[in-house]
Every structure is written in structure tokens, then in C-alpha cells.
Amino acid sequence: MSTTPVTPLELFGIDALLSEEERDIAATVRRFVDERLRPRIAEWFESGTIAREIAREAGALGLLGMHLKGYDCAGTSAVAYGLACMELEAGDSGLRSLVSVQGSLSMYSIHRWGSEEQKRHWLPRLASGEAIGCFGLTEPDFGSNPAGMRTSAKRDGGDWVLNGSKMWITNGSIADVATVWAQTEEGVRGFLVPAGTPGFTANAIHRKLSLRASVTSELVLDDVRLPADAMLPEARGLSGPLSCLNEARFGITFGALGAARDCLEQTIDYVRHREVFDRPLAAYQLTQQKLADMTLELGKGMLLALHLGRMKDAGTLRHQQVSLGKLNSVREAIAIARECRTLLGASGITLEYSPLRHANNLESVLTYEGTSEMHLLVIGEQVTGVGAFRG
Image (cartoon, rainbow, N blue to C red; front, side, top):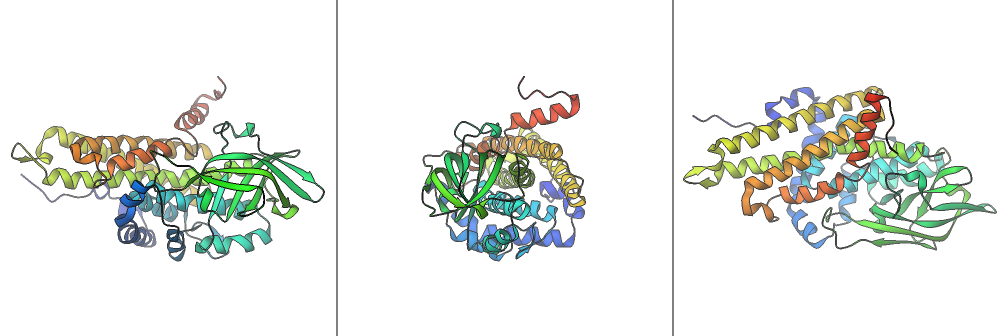
């Protein structure tokens, strides 16, 4: 007995939970990925590069800073932004990283904490993709504990002088402006550092096994002198950079599910046509058990992501709840990618199929914007009332 197959998210009736505008945005981004990006992803992954013009194309579609309002930003809903992240990461985590670092970290830091002059100067250029931004918080010795950062900014007359280094910075060596966080006598403050500023260098990191279709860099600041108006005036303390990270984590909640969906859809198509012992691989009970379990986890993750998105649009979402989404989506997505690879057999280790590429990428997504361990502790503190970060 056979029936007409449906996709995993069709089985959950996800489209019925979306508005017509949200469905249209998702479909537009999916076409962009399928037509402009997917044919080149394997090449970029293998060569460890990505075409810079992708930023301009994403800007032309309104994807850069799309959930921000004003300054030539699209001003869409949080759910629409999440769906765009899902479609981008269905192509590759590197594509979603480029867009989310640009919008949720670089642009959001300026939009939320910058002066009116900083917003008008940078945001329209970043929204169009004419300029690329990056976000310098993580340091070689301080990732999960940003309060320990060693990068410093000291006043010298009317200027600021910055010294230090940042590590694992997406877009770093192709960025036109970096938001750099540094310790000052007033606590942690943010600074906009244009590319080409004397003493500021960005070195690309090579030989990566993950996020290869993405630019990752080290930022070095050696007596970088900035005018007073380079500081983000509204950001004081760690609440500034952490608020930006929360925006990026929200996008990952949807994005990682895009990688999982792509793995599952490719694998379902493969097992329906691959014959083993004169029967389609899809006809075996063990195959169907794997596919059913993965479908269930993908659908549950999508329902959680949509719920969090509606809460964000309503203004009720707390950062601890974003930890639920980021932890669940990435953990389940990487499990789905690995399981899909098993069903693809030897074919699964090639770039002809996406699951192992997605699995490699998700190893990075599992770590950045808060490791899974840190999100577990955030959730644990919420349900017990006891903080265990230093336990």
C-alpha cells in the first residue's frame, strides 16, 4: 500500500499557522536560496570562501536588518525574520550567519544603542548590503564569560584609544565597520571601528572544518584611536552586547530548523529512490522509524519557534525563553543531520548531499551565540531558582 507523500512540515500543518505575508516572505527567500545560492554552496564550502556580492543581493531583497524599523530597513515581524533565517540556513549556516550577524548583531547594535548620527550614517548602507558589518565581543580567552574581556578603551583627550583582540568574528575581514566591545573606566562600552582605521587589522581564519562558506576572522586593535562620537552612547555594561546576542539567538532558533528540514527532505527523496535488496530503502521499517522520529522533532521544534516568535512580536519574550529555542533547535538539528547521513550511506559523505555539510556547520552553531551548556544553565536556573554558572 502506498500513499502520496507530504513533507514533514506539511504533516504538522505549519502553513496554516502563518499569515499570507509570512508565507510569501518565506517563499521569496527560498527561491533566492534555490536559484542564486544553492548551485554555488558546495563550491564555497569546498574552497572556504563566499561571494561578497551575496550581501548586496540579500540587501536588495530587504533581508538585512529586516526586523528593524526605519533607516531603509524592511520593518517586518519577528516571525517573518525567523522564517527568512530558516530558508537561508536550509541553504547553508554560513549564509544565515552572514545575514544574521549583519542584521541582528552589527545593525541591531547601532539601531538599539547608537546615536542618531550613527544610525543615519551606517544603517541604510548596511541594509542595502553596500557596507558589511561585524560584531566583536568574543576574545581568545573569553567566550562564555564576556565580563572577563581584556580589550580596553581609554580616554586620551577627546579621543578613545583601543587595545586588544577579538576572535571568531563572522564577516570580520570583509566588514566595513566593526562593533567592538571594550572595558572602560565606566564599564563595558561599544565602539564603531571603520575598516582601515590605523592600528585595526582583521585576519581571516583558515583551515576550518565548519562554517566554511562563511568568513571568520580575528580582529586586532593596536592603539586604535577613535573620536568620541565613535562610542555607542546608549550602551552601558554587558546588557548592550547581550541584547544583541539575544536577537541572533532568536534567528538561530528558526535557522537551525532550516538545516534540519533540508537534510530530511533530501534524505526522504533519496530513500524513496534508492533500492536495497530489490526494494526502495524507504520501504524498510527501520528507515521509516528514523524518518518518523526526525519528522516529529522537526515539527515540535517548529511549533516552539513559532510560539516564541509570536511572543517576540507581542513584546513578551524573555531571554531565558530564547535559550529554550536556541538549545532545542540546534540540538535536534544536528541529531537529524547525523541521522540523515546514515541513511545516505557512502553518498552522504560527499558534497552532492547536504546532511554532513549541515552537520559540520551545526557544530559551530552549537557553540556560538551561547554554547548549549550555557543555555542549559540558563534554563536550569529558571526552573530551580539556583544559579550554577560557577558551580
